[in-house]
Image: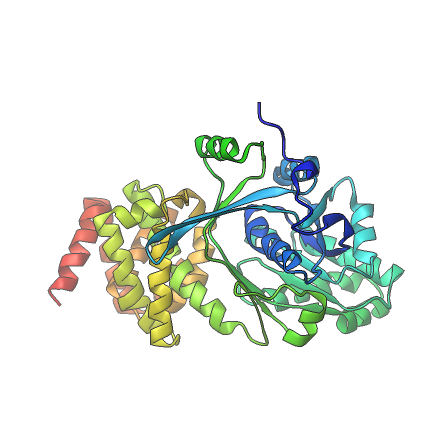
Length: 432
């Protein structure tokens, strides 16, 4: 039996975890936050910036086991980065030590309030998924209550930077609006304090993270020499772009690196990722699901789906954006290499979660701007897979020629299947 991961395995030469103050309150303990946000703080600590440690708040029942594991492992977990770089394999393995403890919202909320009221805490990060990022979900009320605890106990504490990482447009202003709406139940002085002392910063996260399958997990543990319930597998690529005054944020959250960007406007990074990565995933996922293709890697090996993705990216999506062509093409090539990562089990059954909303946000604006044959087939597969009506395509449903093409593709999918439809698309484009 392998020993469990505990603080005894931490090398103090990396940095003295116990000497760093808690500076970040993080809502969520999922893989993305661990592989990107927590890893960024850990990297900054190793560089000697004193970024501090993170207190994790777990507020969902499905995440309770992660919180227990974090505490059992003294906040530690292993991050394994595996992927391709310029076509060559790349692997890095590191022990991440930036988390100090995990708190359960349902039973330890008073401790969460204590953390929020601590003047040393100046950053709050969240990732509660798109479903939890709504005014009628628990999170806005929880965050408002935590901020109210800071207002009540430490009103003169330094400003707080709230950085949501949920994959929705303008997540900073949207969260601010939700918090200010909840705050209406408090008095005017609290609302004025929110305006003066809390900065809501939009951010964009980009990193593919998956849970290793059981056999791979066991093999990695055997190599490491210890058990890690939170072993996290990710790709080498990472980007966290945060919209704020760089100088102001830098003083309280010194984590900038090649993977972490502070900028007054992150629209470029958001649009590039939303259209050239997310839209491709969302447009391809129903076709892959209907064809019985399980993972993104499998799609890159499928002759018809692989060709479809390349054509969609370079011939249809890039021309429908304002991203500079050279940058767009370079990023698109990088995206295809990321999709081909042989070590990640990125399953389409996960990607199609919230498919209707994702298609509306990521793909429909491209269709409205520049209807094209591949996007018509993608829309047909989307409607077939979700059983949604044509009206679900929003503005795209008001383009007669696009509706006609999509309706024709839906009939072809039902009659002939996905592979025949993809082959027909390929042949029709070859003849044009």
